[in-house]
Length: 168
Image 1 (tube, rainbow, N blue to C red):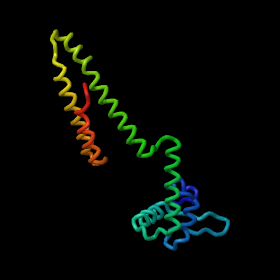
Image 2 (cartoon, rainbow, N blue to C red):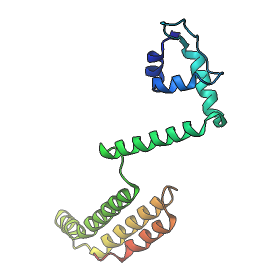
Image 3 (spheres, helix red, strand yellow):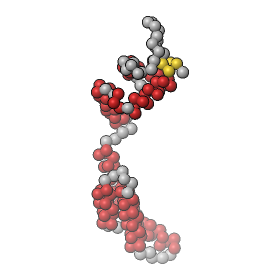
C-alpha cells in the first residue's frame, strides 16, 4: 500500500521528522516525487526496512541513539506525571507497607476468628492452633514471593524470617 509521509508516521507511530531523517539513508525505501508533490512510501517495504534496522543496531547513529534515549526519558517523565509509572523505591515501599498491613491484619484477626469458631461450634479452640497456621501461611507467602525471580532473594529471606516473629 502506498502512503504519504503523514500517513506513514501515523501507521508506525514514528514522527514525520524521523522519516525525513531516515530518507538520508540510501537504503530507505521511498519513491521520490517531483517537486511540489509528496513522496510515496510502501508500508511493506518501510516495515521491512524498520525491522532490519531494529535487528541491525549498527545502523543507529550516535544522534539517533541520543534522540531515542531522550525520547525514552521523556516517556518515563510523562508516565510518572500521569501516574502510570512510579519510581522503583516507591513500589518497594508500598509493597512493604501492604505486606505489613496484611500480616498485622491476619495476626490480630485471629482472636475474632477464634471467637466466631467457638460460638459456631460450641467449643473452646486453642488460639495457638490458628496462630501456628497463620504464621505458616505468612512464611510460605514470603518465601514464594522470593522465588519469582523478580526481587532480591536476600530480602525475600528477611521477610520469611520476619513472619514468625510477629506476636499474635
